[in-house]
Amino acid sequence: MIKVAKPYVTEREVEAIREVLFSGRYLTGPKVEEFEQKFADYIGVEHSVAVNSGTAALHVSLAVLGVGPGDEVIVPPLTFFSTVSSVLHQNAIPVFGDIDPDSYCLDPEDVKKRITENTKAIIPVHLFGNAANMEELLRVAKENDLYVIEDAAQAHGTEYKGEKVGSIGDIGTFSFYATKHMTTGEGGMLVTDNGEWAKLARNIRSHGMTDRDHHDYLGYNYRMNEIAAAMGIVQLERLDDLNEKRIKNSKYLLGRLRELKIPWLTTPRLESRVKHTFFWCPVLIDEKKLGMGTKRLREKLYERGIETRHRYHNPLYKQKVLTEKNPYPEGFPYNSKHYDKNIDYQQVYLETAEKVAGKLLGLPNHPGLGQTELDAVIDSIRSLEV
Ligand SMILES: Cc1ncc(COP(=O)(O)O)c(C=O)c1O
Image (cartoon, rainbow, N blue to C red):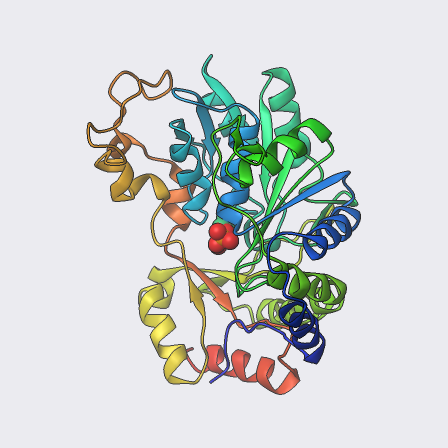
């Protein structure tokens, strides 16, 4: 079986973790501080705040920026649900903007249509290792006095016009979940140039505690521990090497597929202004031309020993938590300027998201794959041609 993703751990990570285990210090401390400093340097920002997931990083970012009840936050409909649930956790309202048909990231033109006097922030997601159109999104944000939180959970090391994503907006967030470009098992990071926000984020991640027994803010236990940080330091040192292999594998696969001109498969358009790091190696399936659904295609590839990714099956505004407005016992409590008095997510329809959802397939591209495996992926896809 050729796996679609695989964490890359060496004796170096094992040794770093062993050292912490025998040190007896597990609670957020010097390793977390070292990881934060090195991550900030890598991304090119002043401050990093380590937390225990990418979801926590998003939630803390919204809290730090003062996003609260009734505020609207513009999010894309194709992403992991945390981009949306973090907004709900602040009692704010996720407002969906459509995606660009080439990058699958938020379309700045569509974002403009979603802005109301209640809009407080935009969360562009750098999907699959690509980069959203930050230049236009920042322009829209500036014109409308909005914050930009870059969700870079899938884009460690991705660059937009020579700048690392996460460093371009007001705050950037990352995930170190097991399948990501680098991992700490579970973990996350918030990055920013703003020292006040970083200080507040440190408080919020640790019970809103300013001192022992002093809780000045509504906080959470979102701390990263020393074991995770020790692993993160080593993974960060290896990140560029791992990314180069990911990029090489993905470009090889996409190049071969382009040459083959398979009528039911579209490879993504790669932009010269973006250094794509290919969390996924995505292809878009034309189910009509193929004569079967993407789900069936995935099963057929699996039978041939090729594991693939197949996500996001539906635009996120179709999730039950939103259509049934069930986050709170009394339903969804706040009115929305954009969605009107009675928010009804069942009425939301975004054309490009609807076209693309369920038809994106991620091919195996992880750094451990060699020529033989990549050719086997191509051969399996070719074998489906009739
Ligand atoms: C785009 C995006 N945002 C947020 C997250 C949440 O990260 P975590 O799983 O570390 O909470 C993920 C993780 O899968 C993600 O892909």
